[in-house]
Amino acid sequence: MTFTLNETVYSTDTPEAKQAMYDDLRSQLTGLVHGERDWIANTANASSLVFNTMPGLNWAGFYFMQGADELVLGPFQGKPACIRIKKGRGVCGTTVEKRETILVPDVHAFPGHIACDANSRSELVVPIFGRNGEVIGVFDLDSPQPNRFDAVDAEGIQSLVRILEQTLA
Ligand code: SME
Image (cartoon, rainbow, N blue to C red; front, side, top):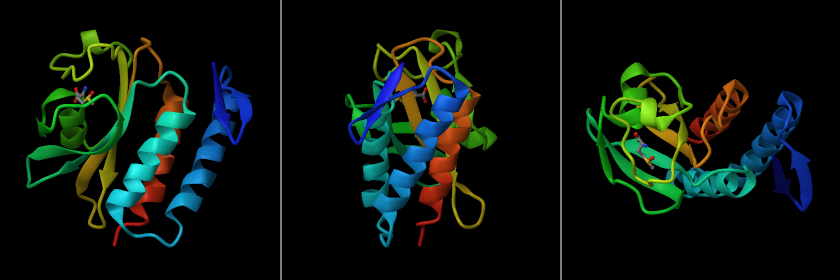
């Protein structure tokens, strides 16, 4: 697969090439959030950057905690999605409960997966932590390709979430 950034076409066929893509994504995101602490603006730009840079995605976006046990849809790119997800439900709610990244190679094999877009076949969900170590939301990436995401993607997306967390007031 390839991805395009600043009119340059990169390969994502090897782990090294993928790392290079995440190096570029980190540098782009750092620039986009520089001097800006508005969380909605920063996460909106992050969803657009990732969705328009990474190949093979049909959805990229955020859910934020509202109260102790519910996620609510935040900025995203892709088709309209489910608005509220209870903690412990679906891939996103399970990520909140476990406080760790979840890679789902085949969503049909994940018990309780919530199908917002019937085209989604694989999924990567990364928790977002607040200043006190509490989970404040998740960054969710979906793909129509089975097995689209691997450990390099999980680490790469986690590194983007760390950049966003630093902009929290
Ligand atoms: N599939 C997710 C729901 C969110 S959408 O994919 C955008 C889940 O199971 O939590």
